[in-house]
Amino acid sequence: MHYLVLGAGPAGVTAAETLRKHDKSAKITLLGGEPEPPYSRMAIPYYLIEKVGEDGTYLRQTEGHYEQHGIDYVHGTAVALQGKAKRLKLEDGSELQYDKLLICTGASPISPPVPGLDRPGIHNCWTLEDARHIAELSQKGDPVVLMGAGFIGSIILEALALKGVNLTVVEMGDRMVPRMLDETAGNMLKDWCIDKGVRVLTSTQISEVTDGSEGLTVHTKGGEALDARLLVVAAGVQPNISFLASSGVEIDHGIIVDQYMRTSVPDVYAAGDVCQAIDFSTQKAEMLAIQPVAVEHGRIAAQNMAGKPTPHEGSLNMNVLEAMGLITASFGLWMGVEGGDSCRMHDPENNRYLRLEFDGNKLVGGQSVGLTEHVGMLRGLIQTELDLGEWKNKLMKSPERLPEAYVAVAQHNFNISA
Image 1 (cartoon, rainbow, N blue to C red):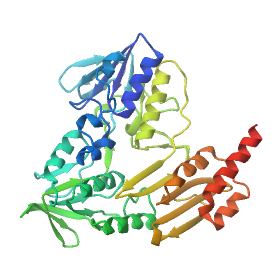
Image 2 (cartoon, rainbow, N blue to C red):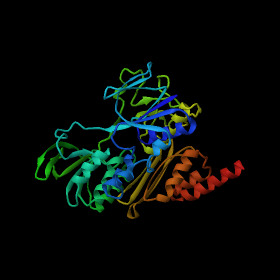
Image 3 (cartoon, rainbow, N blue to C red):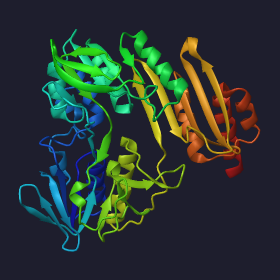
Image 4 (cartoon, rainbow, N blue to C red):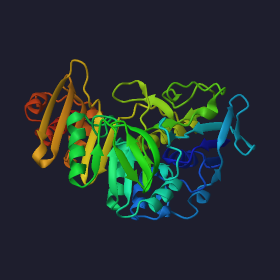
C-alpha cells in the first residue's frame, strides 16, 4: 500500500503520522510544495519578532522525525491528477503513483486587483520566504502599511507593532476582523490598537501603489497618500485547487467531501483549508480555514484511509485572537439564528464584552472581548449542546454569569448521566 499525502501543513503532517500509527508496513510519501521542513504558518509572527528562529516554526522539532516514522518527505508541486490511473503529475515533469491519495494543499493569498501591487517592497505574509523579506524591510521606526485587518492580518499587525515600526492598517470593512467579530467587538479591538500606537483605517480601500520617498506610496480611495518602506498584503486566501481541473474531483468553493473525507474520485480524500466539510453548527459543507480544524481533518481522513471507519461529525467554527495584548474570540453561530434569543454585556471602560446567542435553551454561538476565562466555557456549552434550563433566562438578564451557568449545567448533566 502506498499512501500519498499531498501537502505538508498541519493536516498533511498529522495525516502522515496517523497513517503510520495504523499501518506499520505501508509506504507513506509526504509531498510539500516549499523547500523547507513542514512548518506552521501560525508561528511566522513569532519568527518576525525573533522569539523563535526558523526552526522554531517547524511542526516537528526532533531531528530526523519523518525518517524515524518511515515517512518519505519530498519536495514538489502538483500540476495534474489522473484519478483513474492513480497518478499525480508534478511540475518538474515527474509522476507519482499511489494507492490512496490525501489532498491537503491548503490555500494561497489573494492578490487584489490594485495597480502597483507587483512593485518591490510588497509582500504577503504567508510563507517563510515572505517572512524573510518582511523581517528585512520592517526595522524599528520604518513606515509600514498593512492591507487587511482580518484574522491573519491582525496576527501580523501584532508582530509588526512589536517590531516597533510606524504602522498603518487599511481595512475595507467597517471594523477589524469582520468575519469573526460584530461591530461592537471589532471596533473595541480597533480602539485598543489605536491606543497602542497603531493607526487603523476602516471602511478604507487602497486604490493604487506608486513609487515614493520611502520606496512606496500607498494611495487610498479617500485621497490619502501613505509613505511606506513595506506594504504587507493580507487580503484573504483561496484554496489551492487549480491542479484538479479535469480530474473529476467535485469542487464548489473547495473540494467536496463526504463524512469520511472522501472526494468524488475513488481512493482520493481531502482535508484542511482546501476542502468543504461539515460545520458542526450548520451541518452544512463549509470551509473553515483554521489550524485546529485542519489537524482534525487530517487525523480523520487518515483513519479512514487506513481502514478505520471514522465519520466526521462536524468541526466547530472557532477563532481566538490575541492582538496587542487584547484577546477576542468567537464560536459557532456568533451572529445568531433566526428566531433565536441574544444577550450582551458591554463594559467599554474595562475593554470587556460578551455576546451570547441561543436557539431555544441551547447556546449556539458567542463572542468575547477581554474575557479569557470564558473561552473554554463558550466552546464547551456550544459543542455539548446541553439544555441550559433555567440558566437560559438567568443569562439573558446577566450574561456575565456564564461561569456559574457552565458549572451548574455541567454538574446537572453529570448527575443525570451517573
